[in-house]
Length: 184
Image 1 (cartoon, rainbow, N blue to C red):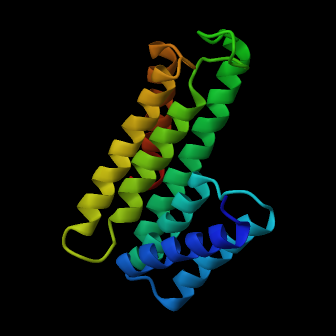
Image 2 (cartoon, rainbow, N blue to C red; image 1 turned 60 degrees about the horizontal axis):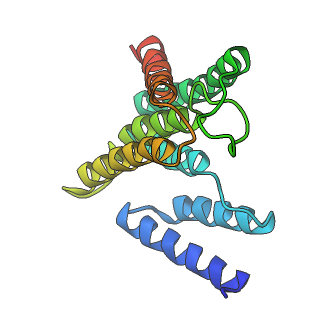
């Protein structure tokens, strides 16, 4: 059994490893530590979209005004995509494929978040990372993780293929439209 203190120590070690690979300065490292401690204070994990938004913000700060606009448009698009997904789900009210699952299935909320966070923010956050290969590795790993999340919804029997496809499309197109409208 892992004690909570050991878990917190592990989280901080992971944050330190990420910080060193991304060549974060002391101010940016402080943001990561505050997020880890905030998660510890409420006894929960920090949501992935919050962490992705933080990395996106750090990268956009380095990229200047254009990068900040790009980051903002992707985050805003992700939030709107999530809200649209919930509105559609409330209207359609499609039952899930298995009776043991609760709630409605169309569109997949995980599909929306996977595409808007891991795909779009993964692209934005990695564009200004240091190193020769690190941006490509981070971008590719965010895409692989995105596909794994989408596949897991089907493999676990929580959604139909059309649910996952609709969620993924909504999560991709909404931030994409925001980027085109805001950034140009």
